[in-house]
Image: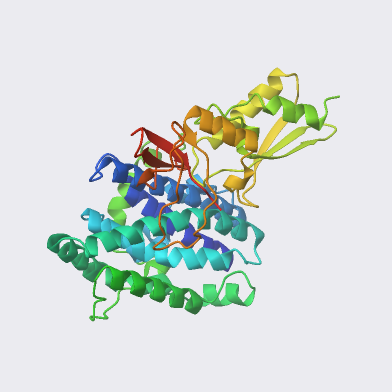
Length: 249
Length: 161
């Protein structure tokens, strides 16, 4: 399995699984505008997943397209980061999950625009424009809830305390990254992490939120080692293709 | 033998499925038209990654050109250079305004965080006293605004750079 295929799958699965999570809000948003915002974000993410997984299929060259990759793999073959598969929880938890992710995705796509791989650079250029809107939306809500009422502050602080343990998995690297870095296809993750840390720190300051001091972290998403949530997500995500194999929309 | 200019002319008859007042040419999603000995090749680009209208636009282009007697129409999708609202034509922006959708404004503050929402004039009464209701509107490409003067809510075709 090529490093490039593996890397695109990791990116694509992040978009796919978070897009699915956001789509679960459809019809359940706390207000109409947020219902629409979250489903718009879901749509962008699923669109990015389509571009990425279709390209992964091309790179692999075994006749699998984006749909086959999205719907017909087993849980250990999904390489999304642990953060994106965490349950929606309350609105604040969804927003916190989105913010931690958007703050990572923006510098990532900015750097990937300069990738030596032309298609990856094109997808990054396209996705970055959408990601900027997502980050603005999630950061503003983190501030509004953190610096809001006592209850909203307490609840989003709890969301941060719960999700913080999955933050280092965003920056997990292995020989896949080393190989692609040497070929100029991806950027150094330490630069992306540095920018993420600045964004997170600034927004949490504004939001009067405390970064948890408990630094125990959970990793493994990039190796296919998922939390118990993954099976439930796939049961719903894959239902149609499993029940009616090869059906087309 | 049909020319590329004629194809562009025919494409002016294909409207965007979500904002039917715009043609696909106004919207700037048609990137290239190429005629070879055997085929007519049209290249399009999505406004947003997940734009659900792309498949329909592709089908409508094939349908329109076939109806005009052109054979072997092929439509392909490119992502780069990424579509921005600069691709909207001037006539497209005027059509949007007349239709009641505020066209994209030049955004002064490019910073992603902590920036004030863009001032968007009301497409109905032209007042600049408007407020943003939501960054995300009825489709991925639009935000939701309201006019503080005439009180009409309106869509804003948001700036994508």
